[in-house]
Image (cartoon, rainbow, N blue to C red; front, side, top):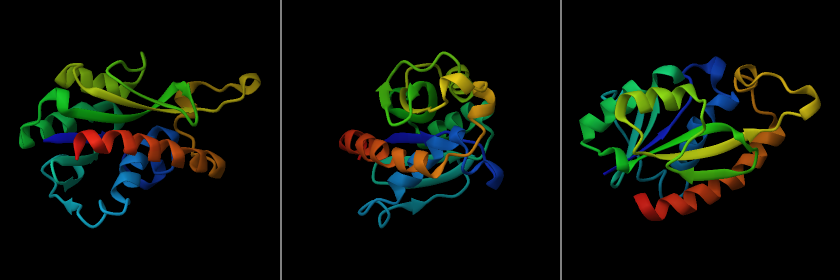
Length: 174
């Protein structure tokens, strides 16, 4: 059994934020042909919106980013999933928009990731999705930038990133 978690903040006011790119990735995967038809919506036993496809549970926590670890731990207990079978998709300001990394190492500063590390340890895979697109001459603080909405061009730049990531991951977790 695997757990693929997309990080983000709940609520319509955050839906298009850069910080919610993990939610966007999970939505992308669940919309794919062959997945959409098989996805079974699960009850709220996981503190979030959860779906199951084969051996994989997809989770968008309904906790705020800073408390994501609680939802991840609850889903792991409920489905008896080991940390090494957990994949967490998150926004990363250390990576330019249009790029990604799948690694056990994560960004140094990310409150959602810190919450998960504090709750389950660090033996899970990080799907780091680049969102850095600030012009260097007008660089606003990261805390403000991640809570701004993606532009239409930025959303379009994410589509091939999501497709490439899912092509990599689907072989491993489905």
